[in-house]
Amino acid sequence: MRRGYITVFLSLSLTLILSLVFTVIEGARISAVRMKFECVADIGMNSVLAEYHRELLEQYDLLFVDTSYCGSHSDIANTEAHLRNYAQKNLHPETGKSLFGGKEFLAMNMGAVEIPEYSVASDNNGAVLKRQVTDYMGDYPMGAILDKISGNIDLLQGSGLDSMDVGAWRQEYEAQIDAIGLPEKEVEEGKFEEVPLDNPADIANATRSSGVLNLVLEDTSAVSAVKVDLGEYISHRPDRMAGTGLCAEAVEAGGEPNELVFQAYLFEKCGYYREEMEKSLLKYQIEYILAGEDTDWKNLEQVAKKLLLWREVSNVLYILSDSAKVAEAQAMAAALTAVTLLPALMEPVKYTILFAWAYVESLQDVKTLLSGGRVPIMKTAADWKTGINCIKNVRGSLSEDSGGNGLNYKEYLQIMLFLQDAGTRTERAMDIMEMDIRCTPGNARFRLDGCFDCYQAHLAVTSRFGYAYEMTRQYGFY
Image (cartoon, rainbow, N blue to C red; front, side):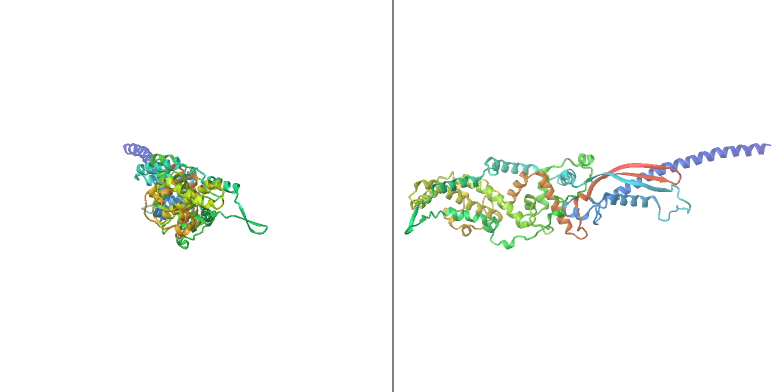
C-alpha cells in the first residue's frame, strides 16, 4: 500500500513540476521573442543606414541614404524592402534548424514593415541638408568671417552701391545734350549738316552692348563652354519627393541650420572662376548659384555685370568728389563745345565724360578682379587706375592687374551670396550637388529629394506559437 501512495504522490508532484517547467520555458520563449525582435530591429535599421551614399559622403561630407539604390526610381518602398530583408535574415538561421537539429525554439517571421516618417534632404527648403552641413562645419571659425562680411556689406549698402541707378543718372545728361541740339552748317547749297561734337563718351558708351567678358578677358576661348539642361535638376523638377521634414532629435543633437555656415560650406565644396574643381560639371559653381543660368559663360557674365554695376556706382561717387578729375573733364568738355559755339552744352558734356571715365575705370576693376587682383569697395586717388584719354580706346586701355588693395573676387562673391535669397541659394546649391554626383559611375539618375538621413520604422513580427508584436523605432545620422 505504501508503494502505491508514493507513486500517486510522485505523479501528482511531477504534474505540478512539469507545469511549472513548461510555464518557465514558455515565459522564456516570450521574453526571447521580444528580445530577439528588438535586436533584429536595431540590426536591420542600422544596416539600412550603413547603405549611405558613398559619393555624396566623399564629395560633400553628407550622410544620406539614396532610396533608388543607384537605380532609376527613388521610392521609400525600396528602403522598406531592404529593411524587411535584413530583419528576416536575422530572424532565421540559414538552415532554418536549431543547433540540435530540432525545430526553431522561437519560430519567428517578419510581418509588415513600414517607414511612415523620414527626412528627405530637400525637405523644408533644404533645411534637412543644411542641418547636416551645420553639424559638419561645427568647428569652423564663423565669428571672424561674419564680422568681415558684415563690415563689407554695411559699407556697400551704406554707399548705395546696390541701390543707386547710375545708368538713369547718366541718361539724364545725355537727354540734356539731345534737348539743346547741335548747330548746323551748310556743306553744299541748300544742304546742312550738324556740327559734330565728337564726344569721346559716345565711344565708351558704344562698348556697353559688347558684353562685359568680351571687354575684360584677354582670351574668351579659355572660358568654360559647359552647358546643362536645368530641367533635369531639383530646382526645376516638378515631381519632387517629400518627406516629413526636420527630425527633432537631429536638430537637438546637431543644432538648427545656419545660413552663414552654409555659405562657408559652399565655398569649401564648390568652385568658381580661376578656382575650379575637377569633380564639377559646371566649372563656375558659385556663379551658377548666384545667376542660375544654364552655361558657365552666362553665369560668369551675369556675375561680371553685377560687379560692373557695383564698381560703376562706386567710381561715379568718387570721381564726382575728385576736383582734379572734374577739372580735367571740364577742360575736355570746354574744348569740345567751343566748336559748337553752344556754351550750354559744356556742363552736360562734362558729366557724360565723367560717367564714361567711371565706366572705363569700372571695367578695369572687373578685369583686375578676374585676373586675381584686389579692388576696394570705395576708392581713393591712389586706387584710381585709368586716365581720361582711356575713354577714347576702351579695350586698348585695360590691363591685367593681380595686385592692389581691397577685396578680391572671392570676397565680392561672398557678399553677393550673403545678399542672395536663402531659398534660391539652397535650391541651386542642391542642383550643383546633383550635377556632380551624376558624373560618377552608377549615379546617372541621382536625385537629392530621393535621399533621407533620419527615419522612423514600424515593424511587426509573428511567431508560430501564436505571439505577435509590433515596434516603432527611429534612427538617423545625428
